[in-house]
Each structure stands twice: as C-alpha cells, then as structure tokens.
Image (cartoon, rainbow, N blue to C red; front, side):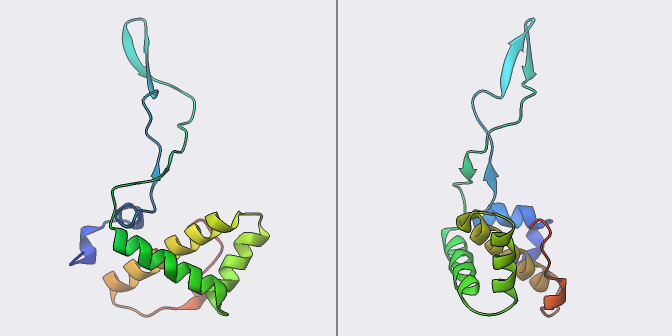
Length: 123
C-alpha cells in the first residue's frame, strides 16, 4: 500500500481489502422508446468484490475472527451485532470493516486507538 493517503475514504480502502459489495449485473439497463434507461428497482448484491489484495483481506478477516473470540471491546461490538439479529458471518465482516477503518484512520492521522469511539453504528 505504501501510503494511506491514496485512499480518500474508508470505502475505497474496503474495496482494496476486498470488503466492498459488488452490485453490478448485466440487467441494470433496459431500452425504453429507443433510449437506454437504468432500471428503477434496487440492484442485487452479488457479494464481495473479487479484485483485491488477498493478503490484506486474510489479515483483517483473521483479526476479526480472533477479536470476536477474545474478551475486549471488539468482542462486545461483535456480540452487540449478534444481539441485533445479524448473522455471524456478516457480523465478522462488519467487525473486519470496522478494524480496517480504524487502522486506516490511525495510520493516516498518527493517533492512538480509543475504545470509547467504537459504537454500534453502521460500519
């Protein structure tokens, strides 16, 4: 990665790590009255993006798995997601996204981790 400043937002970093959702399909557009228009219905989610850094994805996924199993603020975050009814694999993905976003922020700003800012908002 060389520098964290190549990623403007955490979502760009998630795409690099393989945590971005893939929503493209061949049926996004239709021809109406001779013109191409995008369909109004929401796009189906196809899964996670396939073009990513495999080492980083493995690192953050294994970190999330270990953090969910050990006592601490990340396990509390994970258990909170499960209590809200989220499936375990989606909760681990959310935890991996949260850890990667925190890593990017700390790397960019040079600060330290503060657990009081870890909350149950959207990842």
